[in-house]
Image (cartoon, rainbow, N blue to C red; front, side, top):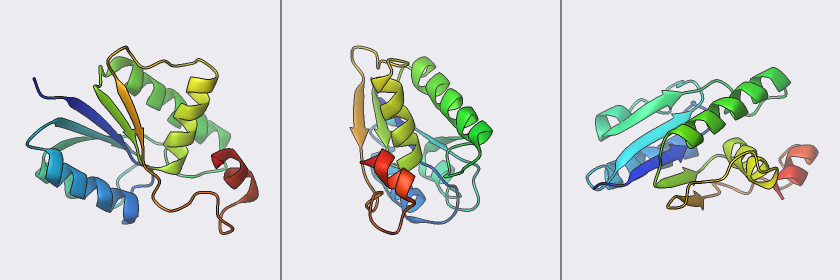
Length: 139
Protein backbone atom coordinates (compact mmCIF):
# COMPACT_ATOMS: atom_id res chain seq x y z
CA UNK A 1 0.00 0.00 0.00
CA UNK A 2 1.34 3.42 -0.96
CA UNK A 3 1.82 5.94 1.86
CA UNK A 4 -0.47 8.97 1.93
CA UNK A 5 1.53 12.16 2.36
CA UNK A 6 0.14 15.64 3.06
CA UNK A 7 2.55 18.44 2.11
CA UNK A 8 1.62 21.76 3.73
CA UNK A 9 2.60 24.87 1.83
CA UNK A 10 1.61 28.46 2.42
CA UNK A 11 1.44 31.33 0.01
CA UNK A 12 0.46 30.37 -3.54
CA UNK A 13 2.78 32.75 -5.36
CA UNK A 14 5.90 31.66 -7.20
CA UNK A 15 8.41 31.26 -4.39
CA UNK A 16 10.71 28.73 -2.76
CA UNK A 17 8.15 26.56 -0.93
CA UNK A 18 5.92 25.86 -3.97
CA UNK A 19 9.01 25.22 -6.08
CA UNK A 20 10.32 22.76 -3.49
CA UNK A 21 6.93 21.00 -3.24
CA UNK A 22 6.88 20.73 -7.03
CA UNK A 23 10.30 19.06 -6.91
CA UNK A 24 9.19 16.72 -4.12
CA UNK A 25 6.07 15.82 -6.09
CA UNK A 26 8.12 14.95 -9.16
CA UNK A 27 10.42 12.82 -7.00
CA UNK A 28 7.85 11.04 -4.78
CA UNK A 29 4.77 10.67 -7.01
CA UNK A 30 5.70 7.15 -8.12
CA UNK A 31 6.08 5.94 -4.51
CA UNK A 32 3.31 7.78 -2.61
CA UNK A 33 -0.11 9.38 -2.87
CA UNK A 34 0.60 13.09 -2.46
CA UNK A 35 -1.70 15.95 -1.54
CA UNK A 36 -0.60 19.56 -1.24
CA UNK A 37 -2.53 21.91 1.04
CA UNK A 38 -1.82 25.59 0.40
CA UNK A 39 -3.39 28.99 0.19
CA UNK A 40 -4.99 30.01 -3.12
CA UNK A 41 -2.78 29.17 -6.09
CA UNK A 42 -1.33 32.31 -7.64
CA UNK A 43 1.01 30.51 -10.02
CA UNK A 44 3.26 28.73 -7.54
CA UNK A 45 1.40 25.42 -7.67
CA UNK A 46 0.60 25.33 -11.39
CA UNK A 47 2.71 22.21 -12.04
CA UNK A 48 1.80 19.94 -9.13
CA UNK A 49 -1.30 18.32 -10.64
CA UNK A 50 0.62 17.35 -13.76
CA UNK A 51 3.40 15.97 -11.60
CA UNK A 52 1.00 13.64 -9.78
CA UNK A 53 -0.26 15.42 -6.65
CA UNK A 54 -3.72 16.50 -5.60
CA UNK A 55 -3.96 20.15 -4.58
CA UNK A 56 -6.32 21.58 -1.97
CA UNK A 57 -6.57 25.36 -1.75
CA UNK A 58 -7.41 26.82 1.65
CA UNK A 59 -7.64 30.55 2.35
CA UNK A 60 -5.66 31.44 5.45
CA UNK A 61 -2.34 29.67 4.93
CA UNK A 62 -0.36 32.70 3.79
CA UNK A 63 0.96 35.27 6.25
CA UNK A 64 -1.72 37.75 7.26
CA UNK A 65 -2.62 40.03 10.15
CA UNK A 66 -6.34 39.36 9.61
CA UNK A 67 -7.52 37.20 12.57
CA UNK A 68 -10.55 35.88 10.67
CA UNK A 69 -8.33 34.71 7.81
CA UNK A 70 -5.92 33.06 10.27
CA UNK A 71 -8.83 31.35 12.06
CA UNK A 72 -10.11 30.01 8.74
CA UNK A 73 -6.64 28.68 7.93
CA UNK A 74 -6.27 27.03 11.35
CA UNK A 75 -9.69 25.37 11.37
CA UNK A 76 -9.36 24.20 7.76
CA UNK A 77 -5.89 22.79 8.39
CA UNK A 78 -7.08 20.98 11.52
CA UNK A 79 -9.99 19.50 9.56
CA UNK A 80 -7.62 18.20 6.86
CA UNK A 81 -5.09 16.66 9.27
CA UNK A 82 -7.80 15.08 11.43
CA UNK A 83 -9.87 13.58 8.62
CA UNK A 84 -7.23 12.74 6.03
CA UNK A 85 -5.79 9.54 7.53
CA UNK A 86 -2.31 10.68 6.47
CA UNK A 87 0.75 8.51 6.99
CA UNK A 88 3.01 11.57 6.83
CA UNK A 89 2.17 15.23 7.43
CA UNK A 90 5.08 17.31 6.17
CA UNK A 91 5.09 21.01 7.09
CA UNK A 92 6.98 23.32 4.74
CA UNK A 93 5.68 26.85 5.29
CA UNK A 94 6.05 28.92 8.45
CA UNK A 95 2.39 29.71 9.15
CA UNK A 96 0.96 26.17 8.82
CA UNK A 97 3.93 24.88 10.86
CA UNK A 98 3.19 27.40 13.59
CA UNK A 99 -0.53 26.60 13.50
CA UNK A 100 0.00 22.87 13.97
CA UNK A 101 2.69 23.37 16.61
CA UNK A 102 0.23 25.50 18.60
CA UNK A 103 -2.54 22.91 18.04
CA UNK A 104 -0.24 20.17 19.36
CA UNK A 105 0.78 22.25 22.37
CA UNK A 106 -2.82 23.10 23.24
CA UNK A 107 -3.88 19.49 22.60
CA UNK A 108 -6.32 20.56 19.90
CA UNK A 109 -4.89 17.84 17.67
CA UNK A 110 -2.96 14.63 18.06
CA UNK A 111 -1.72 12.65 15.03
CA UNK A 112 -3.09 9.11 14.85
CA UNK A 113 -0.80 6.35 16.11
CA UNK A 114 0.94 5.54 12.82
CA UNK A 115 1.28 9.09 11.49
CA UNK A 116 4.62 10.85 11.21
CA UNK A 117 5.04 14.61 11.43
CA UNK A 118 7.92 16.22 9.53
CA UNK A 119 9.07 19.83 9.46
CA UNK A 120 11.21 21.65 6.90
CA UNK A 121 12.24 25.28 7.20
CA UNK A 122 12.69 27.17 3.95
CA UNK A 123 14.69 30.11 5.12
CA UNK A 124 14.99 31.11 8.73
CA UNK A 125 11.60 32.39 9.93
CA UNK A 126 13.07 34.26 12.86
CA UNK A 127 15.89 36.27 11.33
CA UNK A 128 15.98 40.11 11.47
CA UNK A 129 13.93 40.51 8.26
CA UNK A 130 10.71 39.19 9.83
CA UNK A 131 8.16 40.89 12.08
CA UNK A 132 9.23 40.78 15.73
CA UNK A 133 6.10 38.96 16.96
CA UNK A 134 6.30 36.38 14.14
CA UNK A 135 9.99 35.81 14.83
CA UNK A 136 9.26 35.36 18.54
CA UNK A 137 6.44 32.86 17.83
CA UNK A 138 8.58 30.94 15.32
CA UNK A 139 11.37 30.49 17.86
